[in-house]
Amino acid sequence: MYEGVLVRLRAYEKEEMGYVKDLINKSEIKKYLSPGIPFPYTLEDELKFYESISANNDTYTFAIEAKEDEELIGGCGINAIDWKNSTATVGIFIGKEGFLSKGYGTDAMKILINFIFNEMNINKIKLDVYSFNVRAINCYEKLGFKKEGTLRKEIFREGKYHDILVYGMFRDEFKY
Image 1 (tube, helix red, strand yellow):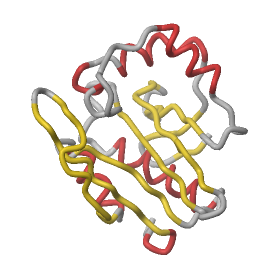
Image 2: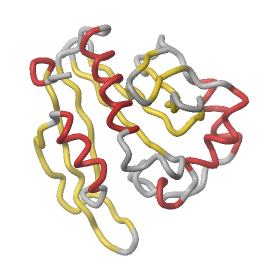
Image 3: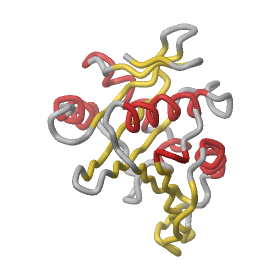
C-alpha cells in the first residue's frame, strides 16, 4: 500500500470487481480508457482482469482508494515496462462521481510516479491521452509531463476523429 495526501494505492480485492465494472462502464469514463469501440465490460471480463493481475508480468495494477472514507474511486497502473530501455507506460482512471477535478487523480499519479522512479529505478514514464480529455492533460502537465508528439486523428469518438497526444517524463524532471 502506498499513501499520498488524498489517496492510497493498494491491491484490488476480488469482491470489488462488480463495482469496478460499474465504474468503468460509465459512458463519461469509458470514452477515455481505450481506443477501441467503447463496448461495456461484463463481470466476467473484470474477473479475468483480476485473475491476470500479477507483479510477474511487467504490469502493476493498483486500486485507488480515497483516504477519507477508504472508498474505491478508480484505478491506475503500469501497463508496460521496457527494462532494457528503462521506460514504463502508465494509465489511470477516476470513476467515482464527486472525486473528479478535486486532486485525487493528481495525488494518485504522484504516488505512481514516485513508485516507478524510486522503487523500480525506471528512467522515463510514457502515456497517451486523447486530445478531448482536457482534465487529464491539465493533470499530466501540472505533474511535469511534456508533450512529445501527436498522433493526428487517431481515435474516433462521438462521431469525430481526435488526436492522441503522447507525453513523457524523465526521472530528473519529477519535482515531488
